[in-house]
Image 1 (tube, helix red, strand yellow):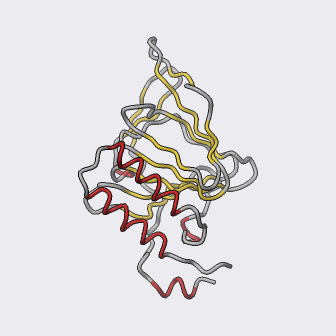
Image 2 (tube, helix red, strand yellow):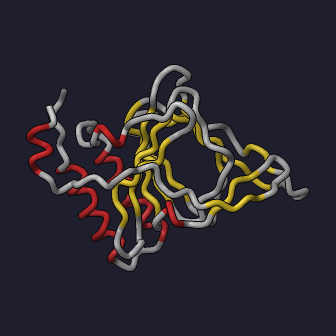
Length: 201
């Protein structure tokens, strides 16, 4: 196996912390943050193995880092073959970076009669692609694994502790059901453990 290199994740977290410390508008955070995330996912040698494990029944949302002031969080989404989310929103800004495999994102919009309908064409993210999410724009979407026979992994960054944010899933008639996602992670990765990099071969 390729040795694990946690330095890219450490560098990303340091740079993103510096970004959110400045009084930037959401547009600036998304623009600069997408560049930082794109740089992180350019290489695939830093994500710990245990945070890329699929579940046979549903997708996994592993917490990699939560800013102590809840300014942002970083999670790995692991999609088993053919898995998908319900239609849902976020209510905070977000960035999605594709690390392995591919995923499909379909936006939805509420029509005057209250129902939800697809908006535009579905977007397929390939490794290295980054997509932006903004709560004041198209914030309702459904995401699915592009592949029916293999695992896909994406890295998401959100403008809050996303596992603790009250959000909603949507039925076709537009009815909302509140939820708080939590995390699949049994524990947090110790990204400062240099010995793990040396021994992970």
